[in-house]
Length: 110
Image 1 (spheres, rainbow, N blue to C red):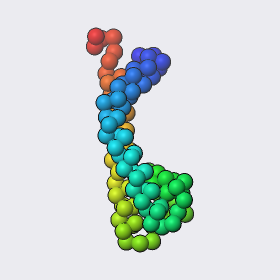
Image 2 (image 1 turned 90 degrees about the vertical axis):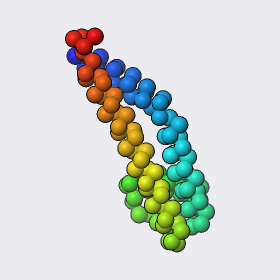
Image 3 (image 1 turned 135 degrees about the vertical axis):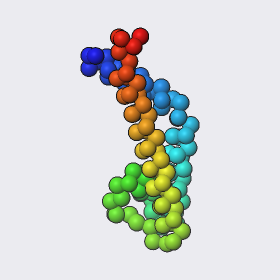
C-alpha cells in the first residue's frame, strides 16, 4: 500500500473516531480547565497560570514551576492528572484503531 494512501486512510479513521468520542473529550478538557481554574483561585495564580498548570499536570509533564500547597488543591491536581491520563489514553486508542483499520484495508480485502 502506498504511503500516501495509508496516510489518508489513517487520517480519515482518526477524524471519524474523534467525531465519535468528541463529547467525552470535550467533557474531559472542560473538567481539566475548570479544576485548574479552581486550583489557581485557591492558590492565588492568574488565569493563564491556572490553565497552564492544568494542562502541564494533565499531560503528566509536571514541570514543578507551579505546585499546589493545600491538601484540597493537591487532591484536585490528582483529579486533573487522572483526567489527563484518560484524555491521552482515549486519543491513543483512537489513533491505534485508525492505524489498524488503515493497514488492514488493502485491495485484497475489498
